[in-house]
Amino acid sequence: WLVKKISCEKPDILLGDLNAPLEDPALAKIPMESSYGPKAPATYPTRAPETTIDHILYGPRYTSKTKADTFLSSASDHLPVFADLIRT
Image (cartoon, rainbow, N blue to C red; front, side, top):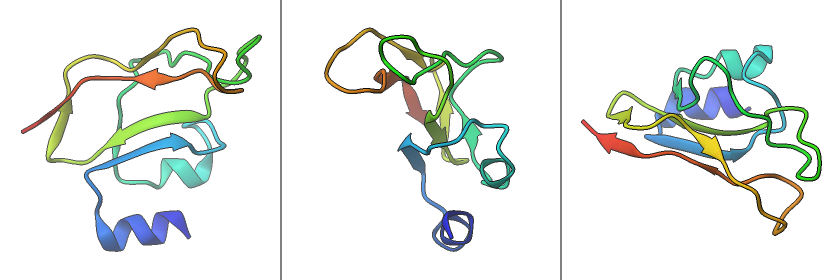
């Protein structure tokens, strides 16, 4: 349902816990760019991150000034993800 909704509404930014890595077939269909570089940092679980399921995706009206990264935090069971996006 997410891919269909995005195709209709064309959001500028989609971010959060998407419960799947970018290689997942469903996420691969989303027509947005990932703010991660060639090697995405693991985001889950916080204590010993093993997989990347938290993302910052952006549409054609934005570019990524910095590649997305994480930082240590005990506020959640996922590591926070941050990136600088610029509206083009």
